[in-house]
Image (cartoon, rainbow, N blue to C red):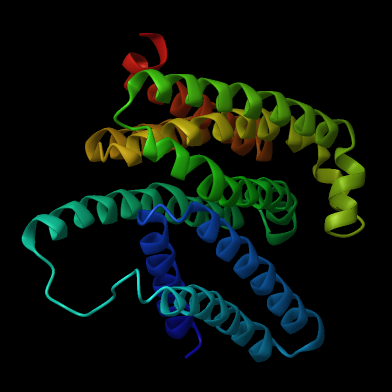
Length: 296
């Protein structure tokens, strides 16, 4: 009952924020996105900490509802300059939107759904306790990748998309951001690796420090994942659908291939090794697809 309203509100929130971004209201977009995320995290934290399981689930829907109304209030406030209405979309616009939908679906299939499938396989192969150790490391990755993607969506993507027809300026901007992200990522991931036992125990519970040996390959994979996402956003902004899907599909094949080859010999560590090779492959595929931008 809660899942469907939460998904609807999340989609509507994303839609209204996209409208604001399309109107080049970057400052408003950033403020609404950051404010909405802070409120969402706060509501979910209260629901999880002080409520029942049902209330914790309900807090997600409430949080997304607040994010939706933040964007809606802004558009209502700007109603004199921004006209909103209901109507039948034209065929050309529907085709363009469909290409973005296809890219989003491919990211879900080759991303989350694949991860869920591998997780279920690992649970059957080992047990919940050993799988939990591996999942603690993957959850750490998911957490700071989520923060990164949120920041990129607010700061990097709007600027990059505005330069999409100016190749010279786009190249300078993308390379500059990639250099900055590489430096920050190398610094923070090194700190994480050197303090992995403490960090895992702090964010999870006593005993999870045993997953420290899995961090090495996972951290390397995270480094390349962060850089790869910057290049993937370029393909998305250019609406190069087939290249985007192809990169996702090949990286998924690499992941499954390495898991199947190494799981018997390296056990849980094979999963983090596969993750590392997956995103190294994803990064270099995207470099090839963006070679005209990066090297000319």
